[in-house]
Amino acid sequence: MWIEILRQNREEVLRALRQYEDELHTFQTALANRDFSELRARLERGKAYRDGFRS
Image 1 (cartoon, rainbow, N blue to C red):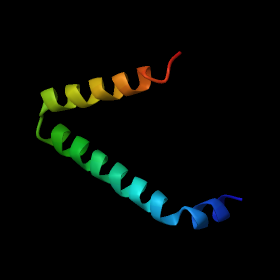
Image 2: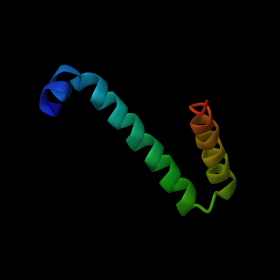
Image 3: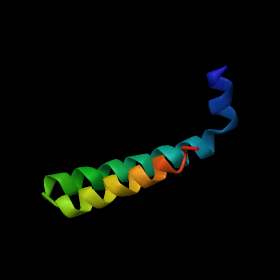
Image 4: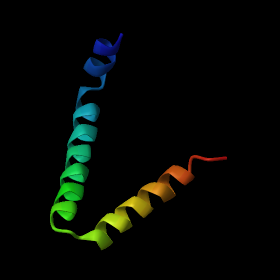
């Protein structure tokens, strides 16, 4: 079943994976550069996004 889902949504899945890679790279760079204000901002945005799913 998953192969067919990936086949039918190939471009969208690839786009989402590239976006995720970009986010991870930015996070990794901020951590490597000790940019803790950027890390804090990213974590806070992630929390706000997750909180949006709660009822």
